[in-house]
Amino acid sequence: MKIAAVNTYVLSADLETPFAYSQAWYATRMALIVEVVADHGLSGFGEVYGPPRPNRGVVEAYAPLLVGEDPFAIERHWQRLYNHLRDHGQRGLAIQALSGIDIALWDLKGKALGLPVHVLMGGPIRERVRAYATGLYRRDRPDHEAYLREEAASYVEAGFTAMKLKTGWGVAEDVRLTRALRDEIGGEVELMVDANHAYDAVDALAYVRKVEDLDIGWFEEPVAPEDYDGYREVKAGGTIPVAGGECSFTRYGFRRLLTERLVDIAQPDTCAAGGLSECKKIADMAQAFGVRYVPHCWGTGIARAAALQLLAVLPHNPPGLHATEPLLEFDMSEHPIRDAVTTEPIVQEDGFVRVPTGPGLGIEVDRATLERFRA
Ligand code: CA
Image 1: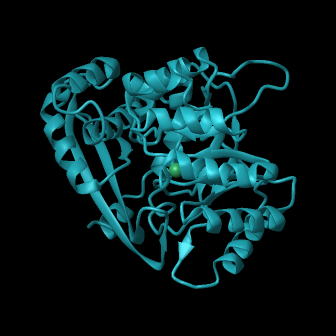
Image 2: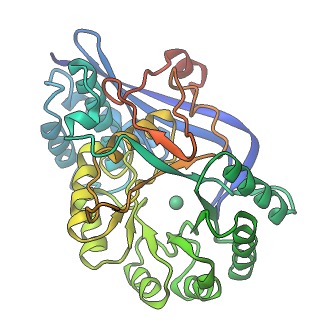
């Protein structure tokens, strides 16, 4: 079997209700889907997290290195593609595009062998994963507390046992809304917060000191990803666990976060940090350094399936009869493509999601959706 083609699909969908996080407003959701086609017609799909159009250019730059090659030699392809752009991009687009190709190669291999990716990667260690709801974004309305309370209550009603609030709107405002949401959901449901690096260490710690009594599960991206000393200060200066890593890439990029223990929870995105191959390596590194691993996941059903295949093989950290289990980030914000791109949606039940057990990523991509949302 040889690789015959590498196809890309840039998808776009307008949103009914635009929403914001601390860095930008969203009025559309976009996606870059990668398809690796083998010469006998079988296809594998992957997804790239990051700006779709520039990333498509990088996938196209990698494609000639793959056509005519053995699709099963995933590790060889990873090293060759990484080395191809190493001098020009050890992070960002070069690795995001590589991630989508890597995931598509794993999907293709699994489909060719009739086995789910997590079995090929040594699993399953677990067959279902507890999900936390990502949502609680800003809307273009003045009554933030009212609609955030309503949304948080709807997640509890839907069975979620954990959720994440978007912060980074100023310390006083964040403190007020964090308190309101803890009040709304009660003490039993886990609450995490995510500033998307809106703060410096001074403001991040000012916020932490004012909400330390609220049992916050983690404080995600308190400071800019380049601000390693800021991470160290936020971690040392408060009692809320610190999470981060969705803007970090490959084993090399995570080395410092892990060796200097700058985060309590590492959050590589499977569709950005290097794909399934690389994220398994990062996860094993994290385990060796005693750092938890909870994948960042904010894409379509393809990204969600890839995250679940990885979650199925994440090592316990540490093992035990009551080991701490990794969580699946379950994005609940509006995304018209997310469930449409697969023939069967990936759903949560009572706050848990089953790892897909079909061949490859365990999903079937709906080709009509790829055409319908084509940008
Ligand atoms: Ca985040």
